[in-house]
Length: 121
Length: 191
Image 1 (cartoon, rainbow over the protein chains, first blue to last red):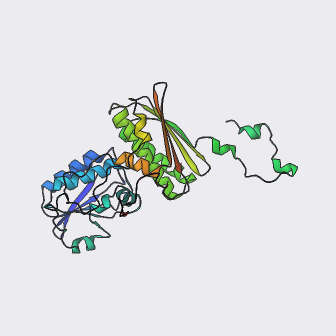
Image 2: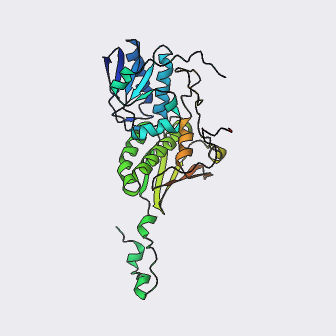
Image 3: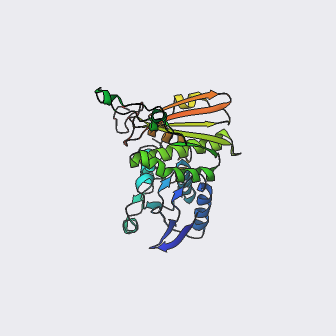
């Protein structure tokens, strides 16, 4: 599981350089992102353009990353297409993550509203 | 290498006698397109799924092949994690293609799973449809697998047989999503 990290317009951009995020790499993937995020601040963009296959373990890892980043650090996704997009839709996780068509629109997007206080109805 | 039985016995097609043309029942479709054993371990599952991808694409519409690959990933990793509790063990996998369907049979000698698990499959944990606090601690990190299996397969049958779990799944091979057998639309105002 190779990840490439860089800084882009104040965001931490993490490109996943693997064509699959599945049960065999999910834990390592989560741990690596945690390390990368620890050494930076600000919003995080996860680029999944090279990922053609995501299973429930991989999705669970992305949710776990969302949670470990906390409310102060938005997590946006880019490069979500094909099968990966389907998995997000099927599990309705597409309503949890801001998904952008490309880097430019992710950088231009207004910061996500802080819904931490929204609470349960 | 043995020839298909019909050929070996020199069967003459019914059409030769002026009988109405019936769709040919190709003996070939009765043979599994996949028949293998693998170790219930995430890395070998990953490897096998990579190998199966072109095979599934040969017989299915592209999105149906994707669905099959995902369902297999969920089923096989579920066995590795819960059936064999991460200790590894043999899984046999057989896939037949017939009548625009993929019949998948998976057998393992791991812990018995509750038959009810597959009889009453949930549609998986779902976040609230309202916008969720980004890092909501209640967001589910697991449990998506059964929901995915349930959504993408047309039917599921489980039985415990001679110390083995035998799971049979049927998927459409012509694409499109199987209609959900229960549940409701997220937009349904009554629910």
